[in-house]
Image 1 (cartoon, helix red, strand yellow):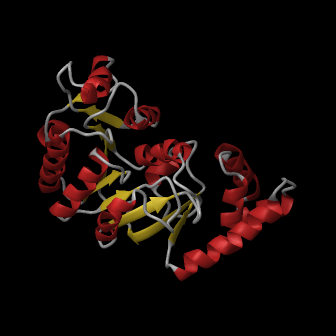
Image 2 (tube, rainbow, N blue to C red):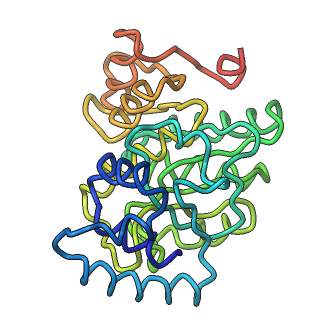
Length: 271
């Protein structure tokens, strides 16, 4: 069954909504596969066979969109991934989940604000999981703070689980595996190309009860995540900064346009 699920997700890569229609009509990936006449089916099946071997060898968990264990928050999203691959001790359906995102070029103030926010939330919110993207700046600061606080943290990379990007964060990724881990829709061999990170932002947004943008320039991936969260009817929060701060322009604009609620600390978010 998993073989057909992998092949089906590969065949309908970037066409999730169409794939979901097929699943609704035929009930499963295996049954739908029997009725498909799409180009590239042979190539998709060959890649699926290689991926199945990778999954089994490296003890990768899988989450199929029709299964009970699939993240229930993502199930609400119309463009949800068909299949997710996970590594670590992932509990995607327990407690509260907060995604913390921001610029890669974070200031020292932004990194410390992220750390304090996560540490304080960990003390006040039982069974909390922090999600981010393992990127430089705010992302990795959020993961490190969660590890420091002893709470689960999950990274959603824009590539397969056969690599860590950026490589500098490998130790952080390894430390996350005991409480949390890595979760991606991409098969092994998928490179960390820019468009993959835009697509993965919808997972960071969809997995969460709330999304916090700590720092962001006027344009950036964190703002894409925030907009996706709004589209999914999630709560969005932003930390304000001085008007002259380049790394705060995105957050200030979110607040000014009433797309995000202003917070300065964990108490604000909890309230």
